[in-house]
Image (cartoon, rainbow over the protein chains, first blue to last red):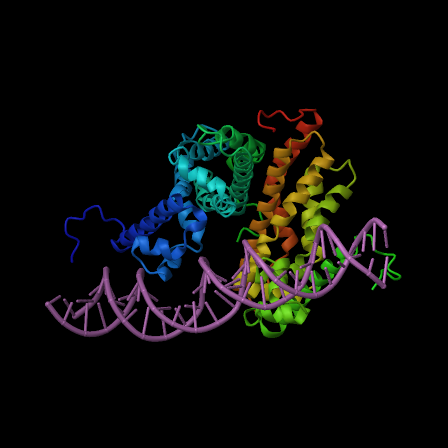
Length: 228
Length: 228
DNA sequence: CCAAAAAATTGCGTGCACGCAATTTTGCGC
DNA sequence: GCGCAAAATTGCGTGCACGCAATTTTTTGG
């Protein structure tokens, strides 16, 4: 079975199948969770619905909740990195980063309101959802060093980890607020605007981002004895 | 068995027993892990060595690794908070925080070199050890608002979470370095000085801490529309 | 087209985390 | 001391994560 016609096959066709089953698992997990409630879905059910063995499920996701949450947050990490890289070079680093992060939690979230509401319901899902922000730290660090090549690796990692930390705090707060005011009908998303909250949460980090950017621009190339 | 002679019972004597079994579990876990290797110790063994049922173990620790790691990191969180609170009021906030955090990873770590070396060995233990820094975020946020009462709750949380993030990055890096240069005999702690690395990692956050401190000092009391 | 290699899937067995309900222990007022 | 209420311990059952080795599928080289 040669590569007939598949000119669009940049990934080695093998990885495309992997991606397919991954998405199948995500979709099945989300659908079943919405259908029967998050607690009434066993990983065996998800695996069967996706047409794979239960064991294979854990080759793709390290926990039951991950598949459900991944259906919502799948490519947020790479999107954030791309958004940072895509900003014009004349906007400040801090603005670029914050706009990128806030933007990702503005658009895609109301794309699946029911799922979000369900995640709000289960504490396990909430925790898992919050933890997904960790995913962006790696790509974000990459985007940072791409934008400021003279930036310490370590500094880039610390800054992106801090951005992740801020986003996590905002998310936790928002989910908490959503939890106490749960079933106001008509309100798909209970609390106030998440983007606003997240922007507020990230604002304290602006000085750190600015300082790092200008310091890197003034050519302080890797001034640590541990730059490795 | 009445409270004979126990005048030192400030905590309600009930919590003292809880603390006792907690410490017994920590000690047993660490001892057994050092004795037979981290992977060759089951939670049943730890429970039995501590004289409690296996089920009770999980009433104290949510995972097998936690008990082992807790034996090393037990009260680091409260120590950090206390150290921040204990600094004279005229030193900058950033210095107070960083010195407190760095200090806690300077003193207590070489107190148990064998344990640290073992943690380096197992990837599960490494991950768990790194995750313990999350513990300091809560107390640290408290210490921050105690020092700067006009500081946003949200800002305090974000800043302490960022400090935690920086510390985590440093710790990961240090453990990684320790992993690749493992068994240099005579070197209890393989890599370079952890305090130095951690100080370097936290330095990028100084501008954010300073800005928050001066902003709070100039009396900008909770200027967020979501301060809740 | 075919074999050999590489990679993914699968079943199995084990240890673990945890909800639940029964039981034991502890604290406290009398 | 007595008994009662709160709290901690315990056993049990269930679902889950994962290492391991066997099997099936895909890729690659000839």
